[in-house]
Image (cartoon, rainbow, N blue to C red; front, side):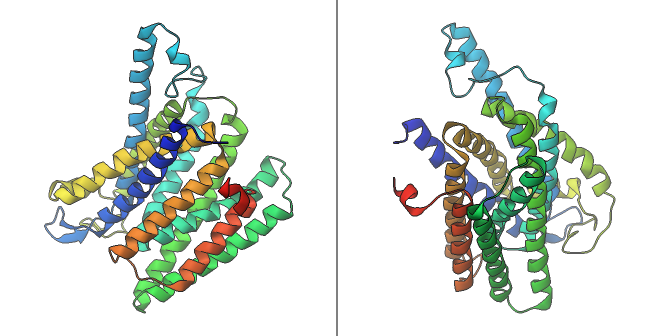
Length: 349
């Protein structure tokens, strides 16, 4: 079945904005800017980056309200047909509170991990969510996994192991660097456990409500932003050692130090704006792709996004090439395809 122009636009928007978001976060991590104490440091503020992400999601709610008012005033029932506003708009927003809390925790942990490892590995390791989602769906959704799903899970685990080994082989053999990369990879994988909880909860309680994508993303952004702002209050006083607390205060998060660094660097400011805007478009596109096409299509497009991020990282020498990472990604992709019942003939149709 041929895609409509709107579906093609959604697919392109998802790949471009998703890739740009991850690259913007990593680009911000690479910036060395003077902070509150005047000492140049890397921008190591994963929780602040998470708050900017949720701020971007909140913009989706504002966009939804503007679109709703615009179409409502036209008095031609376009509010029920526009892809921006159509769907069930009357629902209890607190049904999105648990998914938003999971998103907040998982995103913050992943950004800590991304600060320690490679951008391409960050994207590849997120594929481990299939493993945890599969196990949780058996327990909470009473779903039985067939041979195809188990094969996919086994291949995904194998691919993840190869990616992890390649990460260790790509670094400069410094023990501290190896520990940081391994820690980053493990944090990203741990975050996928929480993401899998989010996906199972959304499937059990949110799926079928036909909520407009912009409205759903907007409410999750509101809950997530409030949650991360509250979490940063104690994080501002909890002391830790590098690489987890590489800021002027030596705490897990230092919002004032982050804003001073942003104010001292135009490049860093552009990266933060990129994080905020790209995540808004990416989440809207992602949910819309699932709603307009399928979750399988979203998985395929996310794989394309991984290739873009990997290629960019190699071109700009953010990492070295290692053949094991290519093999690991290939095995990971085949495993994801097997789990989602995607085979080569289906991709060519």
